[in-house]
Image (tube, rainbow, N blue to C red; front, side):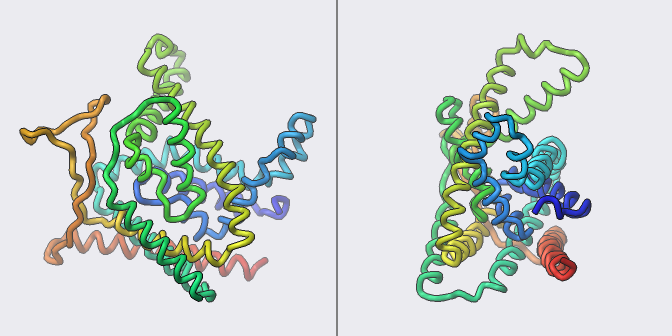
Length: 339
């Protein structure tokens, strides 16, 4: 499989990894949707499933090339490379636009999810009582999650490890946003903003020969939290892939129906027109967490006015988001014709 990949295919894999990494960082958006719509979801899950006892035995015996081939190494390494680059480049740009042009970012992702629903549903011809029930169940769960209120920040290492396992669900379960789950658990800022920035700053300092961070207890604590979170994410990624590969193999149509329902339900999370509701005290003053960040309670969604020029720009970005998915669909069809 990996020996037949062209240079263009490998480049697209890195780009898909960039997209997955960026999507995973945005609350309400799932990197798994990128994998599903990009046409490599099943390969992603089955490749992760190959990280098992046999793979570890190959490493122990020093058979690294066999390990690389067995685990579909080219595919996984390029994809993961793209995700890692995304966290220190694309996601930084995304953070900027979320701060400056939040409405347009949400609008583009809303369009992408609408396009995802079309992409998945258009070729699904297995509707029956079981799949319809599964889709409705997925829809209900997706809608219910969007209305939950976030918990308080918790830096207990065992809880951080659990957050890692849960957050990675966004890569393996299309429609379930790992970032949004972290918001509900109260640790989004700690794990996907503060920790990543701490790692970025540490690498930057090391490159210029500055090792003063080793005396910074706050920085070391944050890096320790990031290490535990990463370990939890790796554990979750491998364990969930084994479960999902079994489910996809034995209940593929029902799984697709649940995913379709879940993605539809997640539209409420990424609805572009919303106001952030922050926690306040009895006097109406904003309450801050241990890092001095405002505590998010939930979002207030509203219907935009068509007389507002900003609304029309947002609708343009919705269409732009849909167009991205239509392009991926077109690319996938043309690629299959040339194989």
